[in-house]
Image (tube, rainbow over all chains, first blue to last red; front, side, top):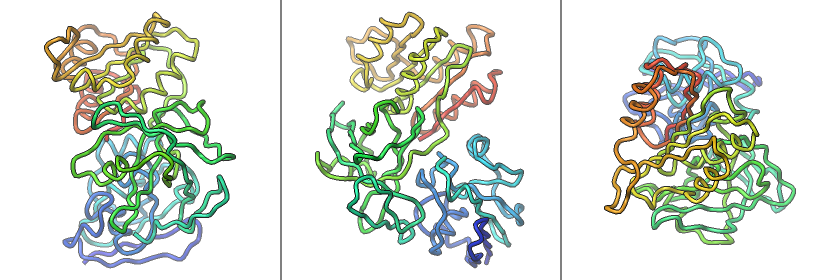
Length: 117
Length: 256
């Protein structure tokens, strides 16, 4: 089993999802087993304007812990993150970062929710 | 996908949503058939709704298919200056529920969307030769970029390298020819991968052409590239150009 903890910069209550990575995909948007896939598949919204196809930055999240449990960034993801507002050293795109197990905590930035980028 | 359900209200131009993102309604005003499997949809926004778009951005259509709301991004092929009439251009994708849904739409129907979105944008012409590379319907976001580049008044060299399967798949061809006549600094280079016998222009793989003309031919690495198309070819071009010495941020792309 794996655990995904979601914190919100807006102050919304955090969400904790426990799931079995082997059961991915949990729905049809984003990479199977990605943060986006896990969230949507468990009824938790994360913006993904391009449909989870690595073509925008609206699913930008900031990894607070558990980076070691996430897949490597691709160059395409890095190029998009390069244009994400509020980029941090631990920024990832939710549609691309695949959780392979363990415990991961991510912060959903305020501008991910409120800005159209 | 209950997280994406939206509530429609009747006020024109109102951003209506019980979900996380405001959605708008647009009316299909016109449908243009480029080829049997490629169409442009002209979407009229409600009076009073003014979207602030940048050349190259897309909207995300929210399509009700099989009891779900599919999110499908489509680049805006019209210019931001065209006001509240947006053009999207797409081809019918085999087994693609989004494009099949859209190809079944008729004039007067409404579509819901969010946006504009996207960071593959063109704000101003760089002080360098600018090469736009499009493959097939990848011309959609490139079109407003070229219009913006040519309208800037700056006479830096601008090239459109447009790859398509057949001659009929070269969209907006008359527009490119007209720009080439009006702006001597604009060069339109069509390239076909499966030409008919009567085609006298360039043919062959896009990646090979790019390697010959922008890498092997000279040592100039100051050009800026804007690339859009379908599949791995786009990232192949990105890697090819960056590895040849073009600056990372001078190679912008959108891969569908």
